[in-house]
Image (cartoon, rainbow, N blue to C red; front, side, top):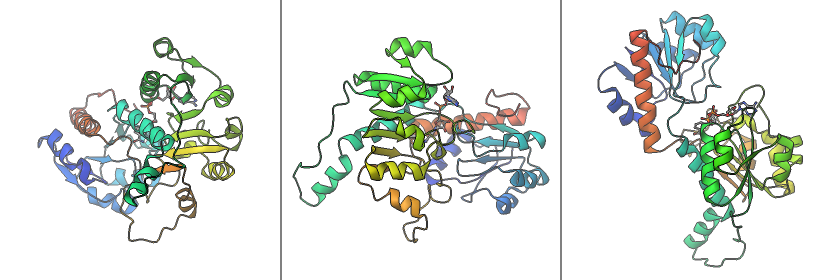
Length: 330
Ligand code: NAD
C-alpha cells in the first residue's frame, strides 16, 4: 500500500524501514501534516501520522479529495484526531494501543527521582567544580504516598514500580483494576481524597472533554503543600496558568512535565536558533523545581520497534481489508 509517512524523525526512520521490509511503498516525509502538506500524499492510499500531526475536519476533507482511505497513527493517544469527522468521510483509522507501558512509567519515575534528588542541579554544580551539597537535600521515596490518576496500561506499570520502592499507592480511575489493587496493596479513592493524601501525583489519563484541566486551581487546592506533580500523558490535563501560580506560591513543590498544553510547533523540533515566542513556556522553564522533557517518555528502542511493527501490521490489514483490532472508528 502506498503510504505517506508524515513527521518522520531520524530516531524512528530505521525502525520503520526495517519493520516494513519493502512490503509497502513508504514515502518518508519530514513535513507535518497540514491542509497545505496533504498534496505530498498524492497517489497514496494511506497516510501515517505522529502525535504532532493534527487530523482536523479540514485536513480530512483534503485527504478524502486526494483519495486517502486509511490513516495509521504512530501513537496510542488520539486526542489529535477528529474521529467523528473521519467516520463521516469513511476514512479508516488505526492506532498503536500498546507498545511499551514500561517506557512511559519508567520516564515518569526518572522525572520523580531527578526532581527529588536534584540530579540536574547536582550535575551542573559538578561541571562548575562546586562540590557542596547545600540545597540538594531530597526525601526517601520509601513510605511516601503516590497518587496515580489513571490506572490503565501505564498507570498500572507505575504502580508496580512504586510498590517496589516501598511507597503507599492510592489511585483514581473510573474503572477499578482489582488485580493491581491486590498485587500492590493499592486503594482507589475519589479524586479529592487522593489529592489530600498524596505526596506525589502522576497522571496517566487520556485527554478528552472530561479530563481536560483535571489539574487546576481547585484540584491543586486539595493537594498537600509541596506536592510533586508528574505529567507524562497530555499537556491539556493540567491548566498551565494555574500550575504556574501554584509553583510561584510554593504550594506545588515539584513539577515534572513531558507534555505541554501548547507543545504543538515547539516540541520535537530544534528551535535553538529561534527567539522563544511562548511566554508561558518561558516562565515554566525558569523554575528550579520544574523539569521539562520534550514528549520523550515513549522513546526507547523497544517502543520504537513495537510502534513500527504494529504500524506495518495496521497497513497490512488496511490493504487486505481485514480488522487489526487497533481501529479507532469501526
Ligand atoms: P489506558 O487507556 O490503558 O489507560 C487510561 C486510563 O484512564 C484507563 O484506566 C481509564 O479508565 C482511565 N480514564 C479515562 N478517562 C477517565 C476519567 N475521565 N477519569 C478517570 N479515569 C479515566 O492508556 P495508557 O496506555 O495507560 O496511556 C495513558 C495516556 O498516556 C495516553 O492516553 C496518552 O495520552 C499518554 N501517553 C504518553 C506518552 C508519552 O510519550 N508521553 C506515550 C504513550 C501514552
